[in-house]
Image (cartoon, rainbow, N blue to C red):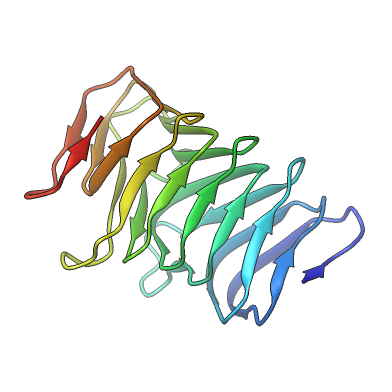
Amino acid sequence: GATLTGGGAINLTFLALTLQDAYSPGTSPLSLVDIAVAGTGSLTIPNGSTLFMQRRNGVAGNLSRMGVPCSNAGAMTIQSFGNEFTGAVTNQATGSLTLEAAGTLTSAYIHLADNNLVNHGLMTLQDTIAGANTVEISLVNSADTGRLVNEPTGTINVEPGGTRNITLGVDNNGEWNLNSATGLTRFGATYTN
């Protein structure tokens, strides 16, 4: 695997990034804005590191897509709509994954394909704008089979404000703290607790 050493921030915007091997940014913060990540490799965010992922609101044709498996043991923040994960996503026990509407970004979405989002750590759905904004986990296409899996060590906090939707199947073996109305809105989906 490859690791970029040093403590400087890595900021990538409007690029296609190809990972052919396992990659970790080490302790460097990694920011991906309007980035399509593809390849045969994987991305690992270690404990003590951060990943920020965003699709810029209102810019036509821009998309943030994680097309490789992604494992987070650090702090991962996802903002805005159009963030697609077509590789497996795992939030490790030491990881925190925050999906938030913030600043001028009035919504936040994670879209999964035929892969699962597995949470072993802390996952938070929040709106820091204090408005009626949408935060949602859904599928890229209606035929996709991805699921949200909350493992026994996992905690999912759904914070107050706006609309919260989970529009894919759920397997919950951990803890959910619902501080806001949350729609389980996928027709025909299986929700297990």
